[in-house]
Image (cartoon, rainbow, N blue to C red; front, side):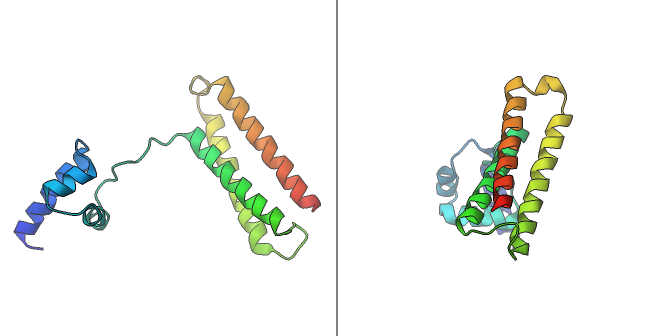
Length: 139
């Protein structure tokens, strides 16, 4: 890439990462398509624009939804803990460990950062997961 192209992409990067302009406006300002702009951002390793502020509670809920979806799929295919589905059981165990670790991290937070509703929600999610796994074990 020559110096002129480096300067061009540096200017595009400033506008892209500045977040004052929409993607369409950045692309239009520099004579690019939105697709070309997005591709360049990925290829050049620019900071992502729309990363939502991730919080622990949403991560736990998302992990629970993934687990629940997996359990529903297992129930629909009549896979049980007793059948020869080692990969499915290992995947389920890993997801449970991940959820457990997220809950451990949440419990280690100072109590003033956690509301009573959040603690109750986490307990409810955990209990619901335990019931679903027990149901799957019974077949």
